[in-house]
Length: 280
Ligand code: SAM
Image (cartoon, rainbow, N blue to C red; front, side):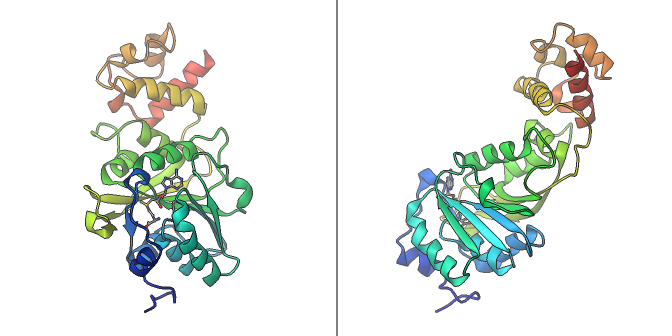
């Protein structure tokens, strides 16, 4: 039997290559090619783009990205057991799939990619969050990527798109929304994966803005936001007191009440405070 793209169905691929899911690698596979094509479409128009996929596994999303017209896919996979299955996909789409075996956290892949570049991944949540933060915090903007389309646990996705004053608002929301447009484009039940995880998942699509919404030095902003949300229940004059001896006056200058808590402070206010701190 063949699937819509002329390759074997993913269940057969997993059986034939004996890809028993490993918990330590966060392996929850997507086996429905209609669903992976839908995720690939959520990544935007892939024609003429290089796509970086992290954690292709048996290749469900990889096949979606290629079928939806990606010029090239560069896939980084840590589990060597997946490489033969990925080699079959590469043979089916000559010259369009390059696979690198290794840890995406340790490899700089930029030399393998030609702009415009989009990134798409269904990753274990801890690796995904770490990579997201790295992709969002380069010193220069715009970044090397145009968009990120990433699967997370639904609760993490909610933290990325959260607005001030809500439970999920914090460091992730501020870093994501400062220099990108972030939205949840799909929510998936546990049964969409094999094996099924315990919680719902969601796909977040982030588009890089041409420039940050408000000016600020990335390092100073990160420091302020990290300190503010590290002790999110404390008043800001307390939570930020290690940053500067005159922090209370600086908060006032930024138009933020020193008794306020980080979760009620907007992105614009955090950026203003970061500029005042940077000026000294
Ligand atoms: N993309 C496939 C899919 O949607 O069915 C697999 C998704 S599975 C949730 C996560 C994949 O990421 C696994 O194939 C796993 O081996 C791989 N992985 C885990 N940690 C990784 C890392 N640090 N670098 C690269 N790949 C990693």
